[in-house]
Image (cartoon, rainbow, N blue to C red):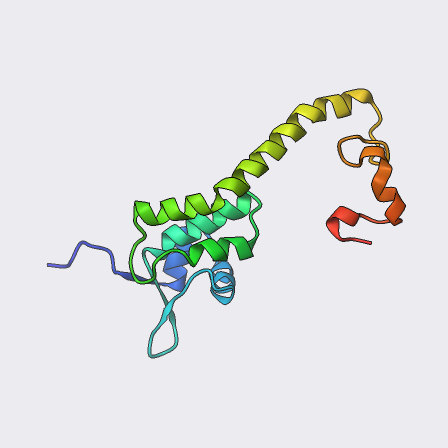
Length: 150
């Protein structure tokens, strides 16, 4: 009789299908130090099932606009070689609490000011009190200074 439990490790294509990401994403995450894989004697990748949680966490974090460097920093708080516990995830949550609170406050301020901004009819970043109060960025010359584009 065969064992009904799933295999403890998956090939890259099995893992990608289960995680809902392309295999190229998994390779990229691995190069960035976000996930790890074991290698077979033929140098093929094998992913542990608990890596699915990491990939899900990475994808959700990216959707929230959190940079990969910050994601890697908190993933480094999680244990290797075992499935993270609720306590492990609580440490990650505490690490980001202040940053997420600040982001939420910024989004609320944007939401509350956006109606007034659109309602005023100016539709110009040069005069917009939300994006560029008193055109202080104009003194720095042309370009998108906040985006690092000049």
